[in-house]
Image 1 (tube, rainbow over the protein chains, first blue to last red):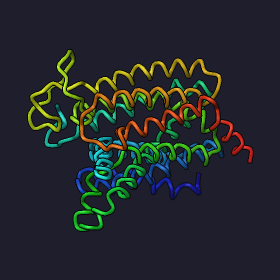
Image 2 (cartoon, each protein chain N blue to C red; image 1 turned 60 degrees about the horizontal axis):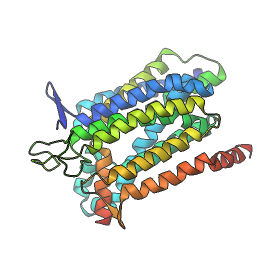
Image 3 (spheres, each protein chain N blue to C red; image 1 turned 45 degrees about the horizontal axis):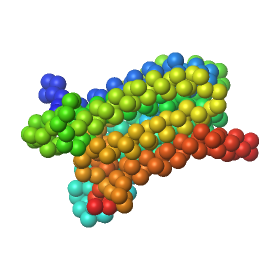
Image 4 (cartoon, helix red, strand yellow; image 1 turned 135 degrees about the vertical axis):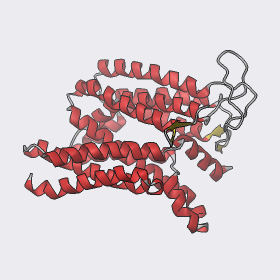
Amino acid sequence: MEQYNNKATASLVLGIVSLVSIWFSYFTIIGIICAIIGLIFAIQIRKAGELEGFTPNGMATAGLILNIIGLALCALVLIACVACVGLLGTAAMFG
Amino acid sequence: MYPLIHIFQYTIPTFGVLFLIGTGCGFLLAIPTAKKYRITTMDAMFFGLFGIIGGIIGAKLLYIIVDLPNLIASPETALIRLATGGAVFYGGLIGGILGGFLYTRVYRLDAIKFFDIAVPSLALAQAFGRIGCFFNGCCYGIPYDGPLAVHYPVGAYPPSGIGLFPAQLSESAFLFILTLVLMVVLWKSRNPGFTTGFYLIAAGIFRFINEFFRSDPRGIIGFLSTSQFISLIVIAFGLLFIIKIPQTLYQKHLKN
């Protein structure tokens, strides 16, 4: 677990940043990027724990949870009707 | 109808709420479904999370690609447009599939089994998403006056004052039923990949037919709408899965 301590800290910090970014409407996109990176770190630590046989410490677990919540809330704030934007986009290409 | 929900002083898009509910239900559905191939809950959840990450990146990337001329033409608004919205569905779909596939590559798991597990959850999440489309007023139907016709208020995206066919709700109802059917198909299937093929064919055929009942402005390729054209490709992929070509190719790839 020792070699993953830095990653766990980074994951936690990124999770907090992503949650805080929701309050600043134009920076929610940065929140999503932070949540994505933090989530990948947290998943890496968890899978390494499963494969190498240690239990991730509390910071890694907190990072995982905060990043999932951050990703969900940032996506909620940012999402418009994605499917329709896509179709309008292709309409512009072919119309 | 109700494209926005107001809570205290915050305005959130209804579609977003339903998208989250759909995703949450999809993840919950994966817990019992994963037992079919003895996949751990953690692996199933992380596969789903990688899929969502891939979907977000893919949707944004394809939007940037599609909108590049506009973004370059007016760079001062480009950053705002990128930050506040803009995503292409098919980018999200392809990104999601690649994201999930990447997870199975990195941790050396059987991708086809994961896709089989993912497919009922995907149908369930899509079903909720279509309800979101209904509230948002996009993807609306052709003018129609029979039972269950939908009337949108003035100011909404669809034309008001006439009854419209409930295209989004019909697709949502179909997807809910398809989720149940896929659960049964998955439980009884003996070939990995069959459930995926079944989903692709069923969803493709329904989408193709449903497109005839939609009248919102969308792209056209020849005499088919863009979605119908893509549905044909999706049905073709589904048939490939039924006759097991991707599975054989994947096994050969795993052996190398």
